[in-house]
Image (cartoon, rainbow, N blue to C red; front, side, top):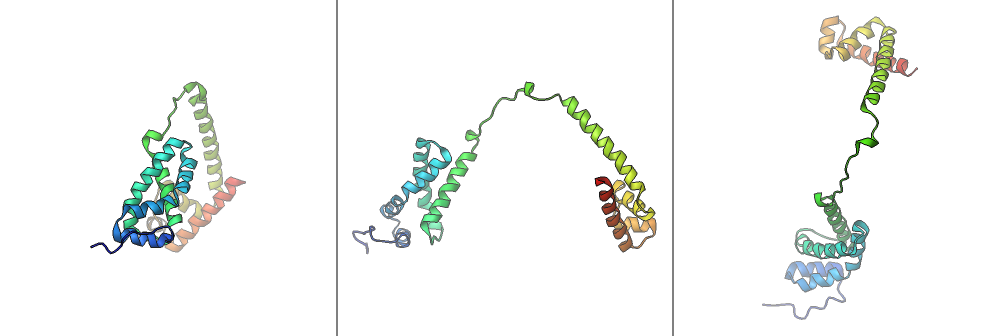
Length: 187
């Protein structure tokens, strides 16, 4: 039995057409709804692809997606939902491996790795020397707990057992020591 004859979609709202499509699965209803926004879809695709032919193909592909996705989703604002669907479709297309552009790597444009390596090593060496001097400025408790925690990678419980300090004191010495080291290194 066909309860709906000669469906007039021109005066129907988007929501009414969505409901009608979900009930009847009539592609003409979906087509009428989609045609209202095809220029919007094409414009979004053109914005992303910057190619008219690829954008036209995407408009058709999005309609095919719409056939299934509209059945699954509750859509209250079709225009914004379709815009999001279109944008996501375009982004997924741009992310596919065939769209990733690669260029040949020319080593002539690079600096010598040895120079960069030596500069980095010298900077690190200077930082280590400065760190050693800053560690010497810490109180004995802070120095001992910081060295155990950071250099020997001991946990608070192990440090408390080794030093005989209370657990809360260990935490306090490490936090204060770290703060003092940071101040010293920045000075």
